[in-house]
Image (cartoon, rainbow, N blue to C red):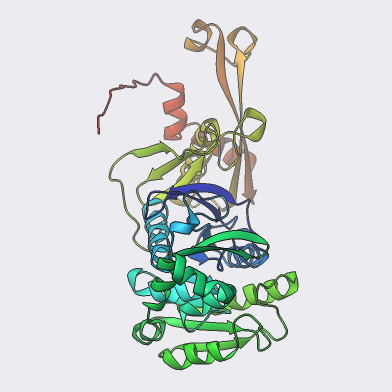
Length: 410
């Protein structure tokens, strides 16, 4: 099961803010993948979404983004090139590496497939590459505006219609395409390769798949997409391709945490720039998001600050009870804790004693509901409740803490 895609932005290689979506599984993330869309397409194409959904079902997080000047990304498409696309892909991998974990899988559609093949060696953590309808020569893309090539060469640029939308194609874009030797990149690539292609593809012929496959070293695989169209607009075709990639990738990827960048001691929290409240939280090598619910003006992309506080109390309680039960050989099969948080007036707090009554105004009230599963007598259950109250986070919340604040300058 997959969660709601998280909207993100990061700096592209040439200064533009690139719009991205991070699709995460609802359970633990076993690995991360990076997806590159087709020429003049976007991260939100049917194929992109379906592949992300299928990979998250397999426990793989997926970052898909719009190249410079396309979709929701900033910058001018006319100033881009295939080389700048490769630079954006590398920058996307850098973003994943810094904020979550470097991608182990690269997936590319059409020209995006050629891009992941060309950039693969620049992303050392990637062990598996999958392409969908990819051309064997990157300058194959010029067939999309073949009628304008003479004008582009003569005048330096021309406005062309691609997919019903106008784009300015400059001569440097065409010249840059011709400068790349994709077959050489594929031959030198020391990574597992999956080539998916439709035999009846009218945009990028099936012979391209053969040339890519022949150039690659083993391990390599080919899967026919039968009667699918080049853009996989039929959801069934996109779902099939996605499911094949998800199943294949797990064979060639180490499905465990790599060694992401650690921040040292403490917790680091910074704004992402998205929404009013979304923040990136870094704890050692772990990455997560903090946010507020949509009802409070947030994006609901992560727990709220009080959600994290309740999580700390709940997880500490579970650990404390488990440690005690194991030490005393208590037949506790499982323990479950539910935490409810609210702010109430001290005068209305029937459970408050001592210092709590002297604070006045509103106080925080955490209600902790414990469920003990196992063949336990009443005395044992009562003792486990007592132990829950000895949880270190419980004691911290009940005690008076000292918070020292100072400014750190970059």
